[in-house]
Image (cartoon, rainbow, N blue to C red; front, side, top):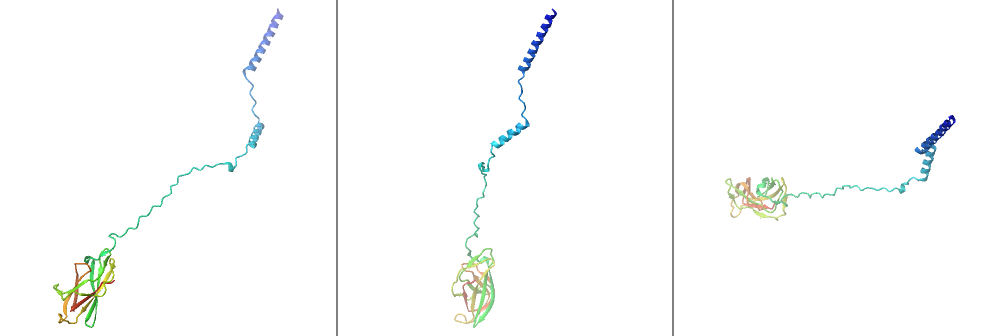
Length: 215
């Protein structure tokens, strides 16, 4: 009886050992051993030596064009031209009359008169002024001046500028003038104007002669 019990216990122990071995072997699969440092270094060396580095010639650089704004040449505005175009005829209202020194020779006296542009714009004078002498009451003395010499070219007179003409006064008696007549004023019509300029001017005369306007 004691022998049977011992034999059963031995068999039971054997069965349990077999079962424990089976459970430990089938439940968990063996894990791979981690790579050693030497193995990692060898692998890196092999990978580096087998793959050549890219050359610069093989690299393709793609440039993305940037939109640069280049300012276009804007034509400058044309220079402003003077308003009114070419200068117009000088008007009496923009002119000032002055008398210069008087010079005499052999019964005649010569006086140079100036016409100054007192306006804001240039103007043009050409030709002969109309000239007469007046008494103190403003009455005409004798006849208006005769014209002599060439007409001359147009003269542009800038603001503040002036042109001139010469009046020759003859004191020699002749038919219709028994003696030189006294006068106290001179009256001048600028060319193409109907409004006269009058300034004091004392003289005696029988005949008047006026030349064309010059610079």
